[in-house]
Every structure is written in structure tokens, then in C-alpha cells.
Amino acid sequence: MRIVPVTHFALSFALLGLLPMAPPCRAQGNLPGLRRSHRQPFSASQAAAQAAEAVPAGSPTYTFTLINFPGAPDTLAEAINSGAKASDEQIVGAYGPGVQDLGGDGFLLRIKRSTGAVSETFQTVDFSGGSTQTAGGVNDSGQIVGHYSDSLGVFHGYELSGGTYTTINVSFSGAVDTFPYGIDNAGDIVGCWSRSGNTAGGFELSGGTYTQLQFPGGTGTCGHAINNKGDITGYYDDTSGAHGFVLSAGIYTSIDVPGAVETIAGGINDAGDIVGTYCTTSACIAALDGAQGFLLSKGVFSTINVPGASATAPISISDKGILVGWYADCAGITHSFIATP
Image 1 (cartoon, helix red, strand yellow):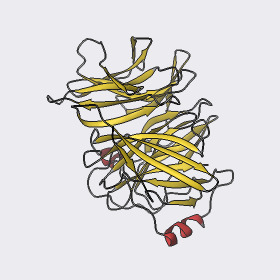
Image 2 (image 1 turned 180 degrees about the vertical axis):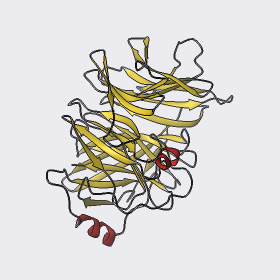
Image 3 (image 1 turned 180 degrees about the horizontal axis):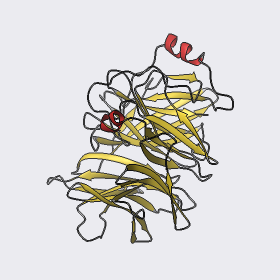
């Protein structure tokens, strides 16, 4: 692994959360999917103007911190550890020009804050010999899961624990690709698997045993996150499109943002708060232009938009309510963010 010292990698600014979507702009080309991303900082005048906008009563406020891997054209924050505090965070993701597809190179970002001082360190996380890589999930012990492609273009999962990489390949009949995306503090892992590039189903790996995740009646399922109570979130497809889900105590529950034509559930914390992305138009489904973020807490949906962005996608949420994800600007460039309540 390579440690990269970082100075002034991010610009923090206060923004009011859950703002109305700014006037739409047309992104250039396809935007990253649920697990893609990178971004440029807002100007000080832009941030001040956005902070002055009206906010619905009771809406939370956030401080947004931008994430850019040094020298990389794109940076995608994938997950934050569940026990993260504003003073100590572990964030994983991918960086590089391939990040808009299925990955580039993996990274781990450690952020520590104390008495006004901030320590920010990027560390590369790459399976030796692999390419097109992503670090997709991290727990409080620093165990990381992700995926990489081999010389034949086949994707394999991995777990990084104590400096040792272990390959993860689901054992299901016909499986080709394996994509781990979440890991809890007990080391249980969730993700997706496919047949020749087509999503076939989700999986949970616990105690060395693989269990298929399949939403009843769905044509494809993907597991995205698991909290420390064993609740799993993700999405499934059926004849009407994509929907989010939560699996708790063996019961699947569909998640659809009111008025949405597509909903993708991302992360879940131990309180059961869920974040993700939704679309209200077919154009949004095609290129994620106009995609909006959501928070589902105690049965109530709230929209999360980075003001002025053409798309916003919260991907992960900690037990303290800290969010990570990506947003796209009007030029179609993606940027990652940390949103601290």
C-alpha cells in the first residue's frame, strides 16, 4: 500500500440541508451510477448564496466537505464506517478516470480532527495484479471490502483485513462476477453477483457461508449495505423498474420515494436510517441527470440535494448521521462529499 500525504485536499463550507432542487442543468454524457464519483469545490460566493436559501421547517443542516484524491481526475467516496464521528472518520472509494464505470483504483481516507487541527491522509487500496478496482465498504475495525477485475475482465471481490487480501467469489451456480459493497463490524459482507455482466442477485457472506438475496418477484437484486443489527439495504428490479429494499428479520420491504420512477437504496445505519438516490423522469434513469438523494428516517422521506448540482447521490450513512456520496455539476463532472449534521 502507498501512503499519500495530503494538504488542503478538501474545502469545507456550511450549507443548509434538504434544499429545493436548483434549476436543472443538462449534464454532458452519462453520469456515474450509484457507486461512482468526484467533484470541484464551490466558490465562497456561491456557498454563501446557497446558505441563504429557504429550508423547510425541521430539516437538518449539513456541513459539506469535498473529497478529491490528489492529482486524480475523478474521486468516488463509497462508504463511511458506521461508528464514524466528526473527529474521526474512515472513508473508502475509488479514484481515476475509470471511476465512472466500475472503478479505477481504491483508496482509504482517514480524517482526524482535534482542537481545530485536521489530519487527512489518503492510502491506496489495491489488490495486487488487479485492475479497475473499487474499495466499497469499511467497518470500525478497518476491514475493507471491494472488487477488482482480472486479465480476462472478470470481477472478483476481496476483503482486506490486517494487511492481508482475501479473494471473494460467490459459490452460486453460473456466477461470473462478484461485487462486495458492505461489511458490518462482525465481518458479515453483502454485495451483488452476476452472470456474464448481468445482475443475477445479491449475496450475504457470513461465517464462510454464502446466502442469496433475492427480493420476492424481482428479476434482479443487489445488496448494498449491512448495519450492525444485520439489516440489509439495496435495490431490486421488476417489470416496473428499480426499487430500493430493506431486509430485516428475514422480511423484505420495498422502498419507493413518493413520486419517483426509480429508487435505489444505498446505506443504512444502526438506527435504521437509510440513504439513497431516486429519479422522477425517464431521462434521469437513462443518465442520472436530475437524480436526487433521499433520507428515510422513522418512516419519513426527505430529499437531499447539493444546491446547483445536476445530480446528488448519498451512498452511505454513519450512526452519527454523517453522509458520504457524490454529486454532479452542470459540466457532467462528479465530485464526492462528506455531509456532517
